Amino acid sequence: DAKTTQPTSMDCAEGRAANLPCNHSTISGNEYVYWYRQIHSQGPQYIIHGLKNNETNEMASLIITEDRKSSTLILPHATLRDTAVYYCIVTTNQAGTALIFGKGTTLSVSS
Amino acid sequence: DTAVSQTPKYLVTQMGNDKSIKCEQNLGHDTMYWYKQDSKKFLKIMFSYNNKELIINETVPNRFSPKSPDKAHLNLHINSLELGDSAVYFCASSGAGRNYGYTFGSGTRLTVV
Image 1 (tube, helix red, strand yellow):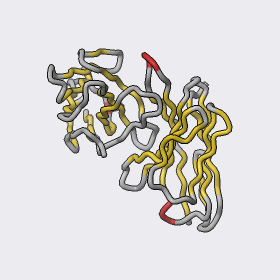
Image 2: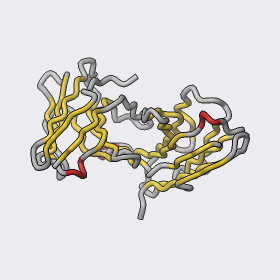
Image 3: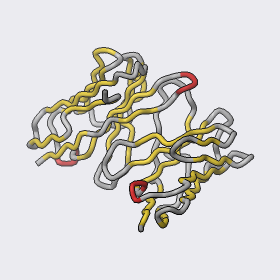
Image 4: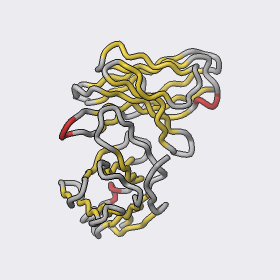
């Protein structure tokens, strides 16, 4: 079973920041927080991941609370193409560990 | 070059038939996976192979059999297809170490009629 809790859906206006929350209160010390998204019926796409520190890449920023029990994915300037299902997943980086997907958050970006 | 490629992209077949879906990755990853996404859009792990060895085998009918001829390939064979097997099947691979991450294929939409 997925170890994360996310809102079912969120809306965001184009050009605004989209902040997607995720609760992972039972996360273990060796588990990372990964974010993936799935646009329509395409394969899931990697966005970002982190362990303790905040992370930023060309797609998004990841803010992890100090106690690591929750995190927020930030898309700084959402576009219509960011409409997708966003999955927050906690997992170790051990070889062969599968990603366990929950229901994710459906983000709808509108103009 | 596509990192994880699956063939075919679409597959329509009759109940009772046997079919295969192929997956290849050119990322040098050690582990490959098969996921199933049903009509409710829930992505569920089916199998994983690490260096050609089966390491995850979730509760899946034994009509489904993965085969890994080498660590770059993981094929999925399905015997005696049923209506309930209709779904999108995704292949994925993962590497190890600092740049650990998963890469997914674009999926194979299987329709059993």
